Amino acid sequence: EIDSDDDRLCRVDKNCNQVRTLIRNFLNAGEMKVTEFQRAIGCSANAYTRFMGQNGPDKGSGSDVYYNAFKFFKKRELQGIKLPKKKAKPAEEAAKNDVSGIHLEGETDQSVPVYDSCDEIRRKIRAYLPTPGVTQAGFLREIAKTYPEGKKIQSKVLNDFLGKRGPNAGNTSSVFYGSYVFFEKMRIRDKKPKSKHRETMEKEYGSEGMDTKHRLDGGIWCLQGERPYEDKYGKVHIDGRF
Image (cartoon, rainbow, N blue to C red; front, side, top):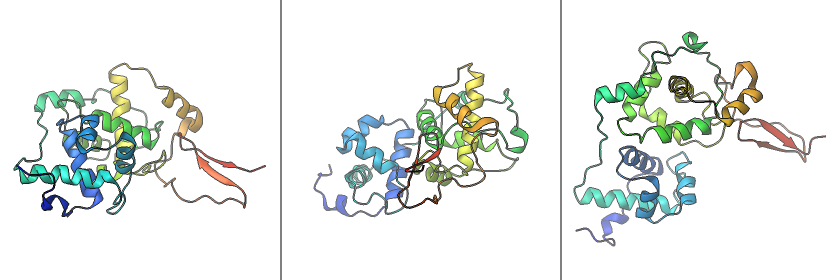
């Protein structure tokens, strides 16, 4: 038995991004639900969301989530408990991910209009990966099919995208575009209606959809006294402009 005050639990040898990856892999394997994990490490939902929404080896280094999660996984390691690997039956996973019967306009040259914000796609990914019978590797293989044959999307690219926050943050990522196409095909396959978010995005972005070729999370030029802000659909507005 490892005591909670064991010195080895205090020797932090993983950075913030590495701990975030441990958390995602642990939850995606279905070991716990997010709320259960939050209780297990003694953190609030807000603190957890803030930490998981950051990206960078030192981003979140002052968070209790970082230290408590590290101790949680270190204790399991010292107890000889291996990190879980999600198992899925190939046929079952293939059936869940199969959207081959759906074709979208613009798919052949990677120009499908995108009508989801980056944050919305992150929400969909986080909701889909814990699904029984779905693995991260299988999901990445499926969204890679959106691109020319032979392209691979590594787990690091996925984690980098998930680590961002903001409606435009990650808009040029292959995970963003590939996931949008995958989830849109799945929506059509399952005969589900468009969400209110989707309908608003269509009105905001018109026939071309959201830009996936040029980064949209850069700086904004404005005059003294003006304050730019971004709405949840990724549109920039400026307060104080007459």
